Length: 477
Image (cartoon, rainbow, N blue to C red; front, side):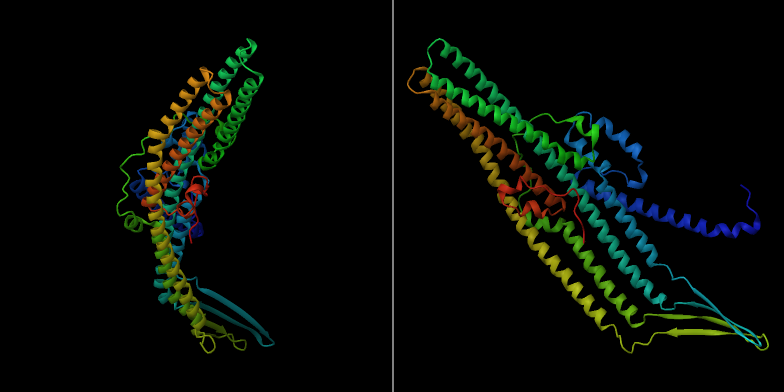
């Protein structure tokens, strides 16, 4: 396209706007890259590309093979970091903070003014052009505020991605535990049905009383009810994971999770000096610290802006109505701090800063307490898992065998067999739930060490921690 020389100047603002937007996007890519590298360092998970680099069609193409058929924990985390809209919203906060930093370094636009007065002898015209001269002093303060807020946003986004990573892993684990519970209940139902069929044949032969047959039938209906309840729970447990993965419609029904909960919890979890490690790695404390820094910077900026609310220096031109001659001279204006000395702004800034420091201290106390609580919870659950697996389950299985032997010898009734079998089933259910809780607690510890403080889980009572459900992404200050 040929541009006429006289029209080139008209394109200058648009070209400047394109260049500015390009610079912002380049900076945001760098910020997002730094966040991704930090997330990978802390969790071992590679974060997704910045949102502005990914089109929806590309996302669907990339995640489709990952959510068809068997879904692994690793692929679930990948899909969530790529497809979860909350991730994009979190990344976009980096763009907002980066744009605010650019804005903070700009001078305010000059103000052009004009007025005309009509007299009988002619028209008096006055023109003015003014620019704020205190911007030269305010810009360093504004940039300081914006830089602190960018650091705060970066720490917040990093923490959000780490939180989402572990939330996906926890939810994935809960789906697997629910499936394992269905498997156990199905095995119980099939065993109970076989026992009932045998009892029915014996009843038809006249070897079993009506009461014994009814007792066995009651056990069968109870097993059927428990199986249906576990299947319903397993189906519902998929939906929280679909939310985290950003899936809906047909894509939310294509994936399956196979396998059982690993029985070996591992001994590689660093429980020594857990409290100090959690404090040192905490992104929540880093966010609070950067927030306090920005408030300290704002306090100085507010003082300037409250004391000198308006100022300008420039030039003014005036044409007299009588002879049409022009006069040109400087102009200057400055607000006088006669009534507002900035005392209210200073007080508000002081209170806001003190509040931020108190939040920081309170968060540190919470993190220390949660580190101690999670450590004790994990040790206790690990010991309980080991005891149930090695002592309690074998004992219940042996009791069932001995009870059946006595029943076959006609020394006890069918009800005694039913009680022993129910106790074995209860032990199996308790083992799965305890193993699940132990793995969830291990993930809670890993998340805390990665820098994300999940107060809703860490400070919950042990019985409620496994049932609590947190939001995919946490909100910053």
